[in-house]
Image (tube, rainbow, N blue to C red; front, side, top):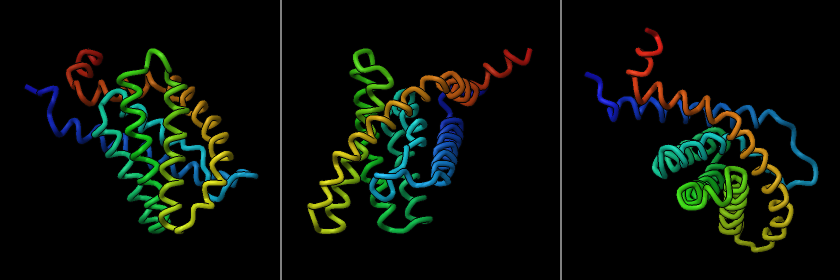
Length: 184
């Protein structure tokens, strides 16, 4: 008898979600820099996976994905990128989880995604101020806010579109009996 809450199945699902987030992050790194934006500003496509995890698996899953992405940034791009990724990612994951849990009906997926993108930018701004020791970085905030609203909206729309596929992956991994029933 296979148990639905088996740790191995949950670990497998988290590994798949982390791999998806890292793959989306890599694909995003292939995009050329966007003019008029601060260096390093990216659309945040991997946050589609983090937001799915926050809404369907809880904060520990979303936080784990944010940490994995941050560690990957550290290994591939250095300490500063790792700190920026972790600070923005964790603050965004907290916002995603709380909003998905308590305000999903009011804000919807797109609204939550926009607020989470703005939280991600805020976390990175605070980290940048600590790293550089200068508060002048705050002048990037308006450009980051505009970019965060745009990319957050796009991420939210894409999440709505891919949600059925992500739910199917979750269902097949966490409930192996469903695969057997579909095969019969």
